[in-house]
Image 1: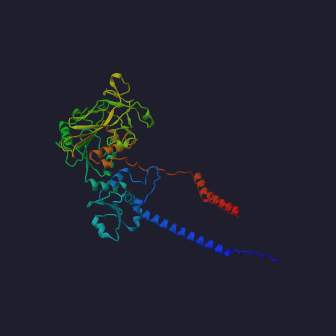
Image 2: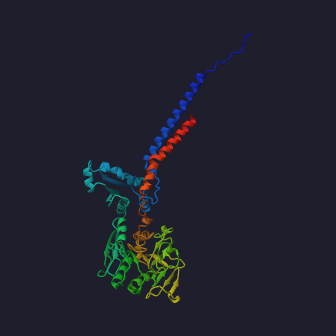
Image 3: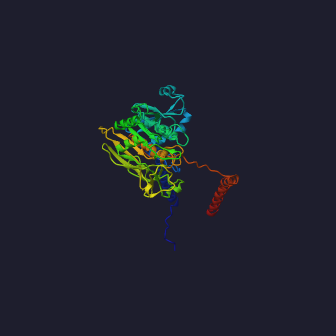
Length: 472
């Protein structure tokens, strides 16, 4: 009997064809999506507002400083950075200029080939390739050097105009151009980097402070100021001027002799800052960790005044300091800047070394070491400003706790920024790049060479062969 059951044939080729078609369509769709993603990523990368980088270096070498970010982010008008060089030199400058462009949509960067556009280069006054100019509101300024300091300095000069810091000389103040211990050449260089003009002045034979002085600095006078000098400073500040007073304790023993300078201290007391005749000694053992003695108070207690509000997590040091008593005057509003710890004491005997202290010659802390105030000139938009610090060694080039120590330079520059009403520039400046040179002897270099050239490639080959054999 014949089997009446009929078998339905399986159309396997058609099934394989359908699978191939679906696979092809899926692969094509994925390819299109992948290409669109690549196009989108490249487009976003070309847009400054989406061009983001990550700086993993310990000292943030490839990140613009807080100061630069404040300047650029505060722009209210479009600015242009024009870079003049040969075409082959553009790539070397692009990394730095891109950081500025990526920081704000108000910054445009243009490159000019000095060989193809010599006339344009001459119209800018370009003298050498590798020069950058900043243009804003019809004003144009060349960067003194092609780096962040130079370019940001050009922005500051365009925005703020010419500003001059005048250091008084003639009474044993710290020398402005001396680079050894006791000098202020490093401070001068930092101020010039921030685009200030720095000069020395004398008030001995002049009844007034020169008109071009944006700030006057009295840095550690050893001798008494004459009545003429005191009156010149009084008239200057009470007329809307700005002054920084750095006054050391009036020590008088051995070879140490610092005048009491009663005329100057009486003026400050009239404004609300009494400069005490004492030597502050810090008994907190924290100083031993950084190798300083009790004559160098380390400060970590700051107020909210703009000069020091960004120093909350930082340390400053003041070797040989005196304390201040602060109160508001008739026309002044005075604020504390920073103070010592509770464990500090003050020696009031200025005629002997503080080796052995008697209770009668000491006061207990904490002590105020810095103060800032404004003087009411009758013009709300133009008050006088003054800062008083009972120490001048913190701006020293090479002292134990001089300008390079911890955050001393930030404090010194912030004080000038506040005095010139440049609060937008107050910030923590970037420190110098760490030297992280890799050093190895011959044996270590041989081990490194064999590991990189032979060990790692051989390991990859062995792993690859093993996976191939296993899958087979």
